[in-house]
Image (cartoon, rainbow over all chains, first blue to last red):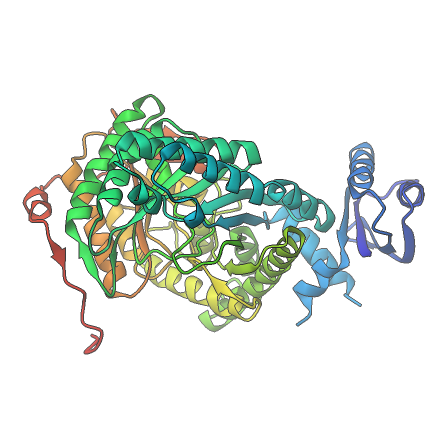
Length: 88
Length: 455
């Protein structure tokens, strides 16, 4: 399954490292990364892939923990959400 | 590949603009549970609901997590319970209440937050079972937590059953009085309809209609905040641009609803019914239909121009949403529940929004006089007359209308009643001081209206 990870917040050291470490530890493969600074905010978008055996609950909990630690907004959402909303 | 802008737009809608799926509602038919013995009926009802809806809440939560979309409510609607009461041997009010309690227990066991369908459809006449069910509503709603009730008293094809309207005025009063300690909270779980729809996923008016299958998944989307934010980008532009902006936004919101509905139906192994395109507000600031109307240029919701603004909004939401879903149904339109909408609460408090204006607004939008707190000393006849007026609007305009008013015991105009949660805060609104008793007392039926020579 493919999903989109978005990370938005104030730029600081370790955002990419810590996010990708959590993804790696949970068996999620990163297919593509793009990052930019938009309106002074660090914005990173990752396209990732995972097997159905991956526990989204655990992954979500760990990302939420990181989100709070670093004061960021982190989401992992199935790719279909975006395709259904933005493509006819 | 989806662009960066599109991804961030979706994330922003969810994070900052209160975009959510308002409800996944599983419709469960209780036709197979009918029988003469009350204990057997209750057992069958409990077993069927808890077995069909066993995974409903968990599935909703899984989808929520995987797609990152909040799904606020997971609910159940059932066949109008009057059908079961009619089949009982020697039906009584107490036996009907037993079924309500069974629904309540089943709802609690499955973890849903409401169960709808303690209902009767009496737009032309009442069977003995339906009359018993209606008379049991105050007791049923005051002795249960999660059961919602609705009664259909009129339709475009049948006219308005004024005997039922007269009875419902009394029932609303009794329901308020029996829950005086919670300021008439039972009335928040009771809707009186004209032209009720069979596949409505929203409470308190949800029930599974006669023409529906054994089990179905209906989904209600929401997103007043998203529409308001989209309109902020087109300040001062003409109405063509306003309508187009709402349509585009409604399309995106509905696509998300369609995705969730399909996903939930697949995972639960239940047919997908409809997506309801309603814009349903919550008391959260930024999730208000009134603020959308104000964004169009009205100083306060309720002032002159409000009906026109709402008509445009309601129509544009449908036009945008219809193409985004395979099957659209339910109530589909903008809701205007006063106590559940921060902007409506503010407008009612400052006197900009009155009951008369709300009645006019219901001519052009979804449903009707919704979650309106009226003085505790309002008579049953006046409530019946309010229901009759609203039913007439629905009947003549071939649309669904409803009344959910709360005559909060002891409350006077100017007071504010707190319901908490999604049901919000209701400023007590004045009703006419002149009597409608003689009118309501006539009884009989108002004949169905002519469907041609329209003017």
